[in-house]
Each structure stands twice: as structure tokens, then as C-alpha cells.
Image 1 (cartoon, rainbow, N blue to C red):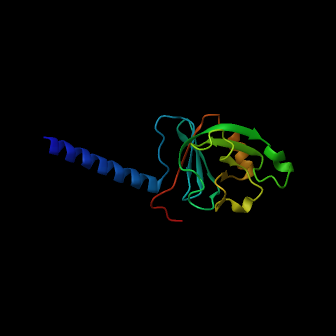
Image 2: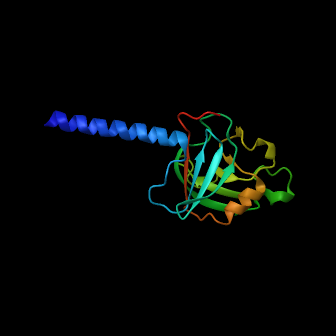
Image 3: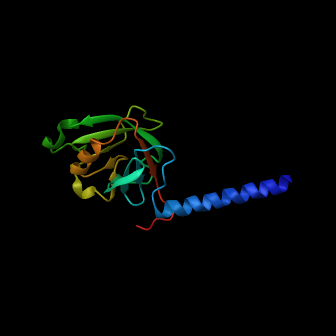
Length: 163
């Protein structure tokens, strides 16, 4: 009886693992319970913003220059700043007009990693940042108004992505 239970459990976990891998390779993973959330797919450099558990909009973004720079996992927005470093008026402002800081294990205050605009719009869609998620300035302004503090942000890399 114990062997049958073990084999059934092992088979179920194997099927779940394959199903999860296949699903992640074809679309963003679904949320568990939360209604508003952000999913960032590092393999495709895409940000998916969900409102009321429905895809509101997909955005092209820039992520870390190397795979390890943009932290994967489940994070939350913990800080929001309008016009950091002078916003659009300051051409040297690499944060653009908005900053939404992420709570990550090593940096819980939301000041190290964030979703923000950029003064390098040509970097969008590429692996170009030091770990943050860069967006076009008009798009980060749009999403900023809708994102609340504590909004979950899920960052992952597809296993079978084709770029």
C-alpha cells in the first residue's frame, strides 16, 4: 500500500511539474489568489499587468544585462516615487519619471531594484539594466497610477523560451 501511494504521489508531482513547465513556456503563469499583480518574463522582456485577475496590458521592458541581475521570485511594490532625480526635465535621470521599488530579500526597502522609466529608450526590449526593470516613460506613467503599494510582482525566466 505504501509503494502504491508513493508511486501515485510521484506520478502526480511529475505531471504537475511537466504541466507547470509547459504552461510557463507558453504564457505567463496564472496568479494564485491576488487580483492586481505584475508578472515579468525575463526571457521575453515583457511585463504583464493584471487588474482584477485579467490581463490589462502587456509592455515591452528591459531587464538585467546578465541573467542573475534581475531578481527572480515573488516580490512586492513597497515604494513609489514621482519624478525621481527631476523626472523628464533632467536628461541624466536614468530612472525616468516614475519609480516603483521592489521588496527583495536582500533589499527590503524598495530602493535597490525597481520598475522605472529610462533616459535610454533604445534599451527597451533588451538585456541592458543593472537589475531593474526599465519601461518607456509614457508607459511607466500609465502603470504607476494604477499600481498600489504591496502589489505583487512575479519575476521569472521561461525554461523553453525562444528569443
